[in-house]
Length: 46
Image (cartoon, rainbow, N blue to C red; front, side, top):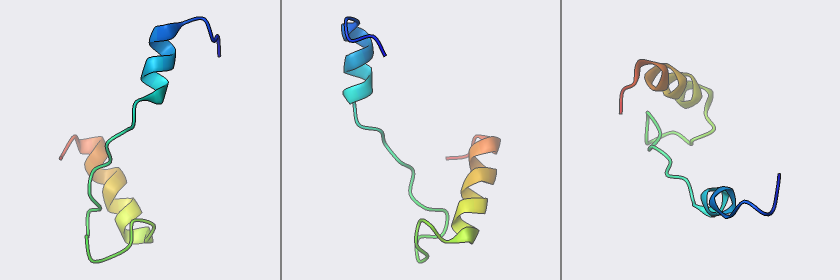
C-alpha cells in the first residue's frame, strides 16, 4: 500500500462498526450466528 496517500491512511486507521450478533445470547463465532449474519447482510437487513 502506498504510504504517500494520506486519504487512504486515514480511512485505514478508522475503526469499523460491527452489527450486533443475530442471536445475542450466542457468541459471535457460533455457527448459527455466522449463518444468520451472512443471510441478513445479503438481504440488506439491519
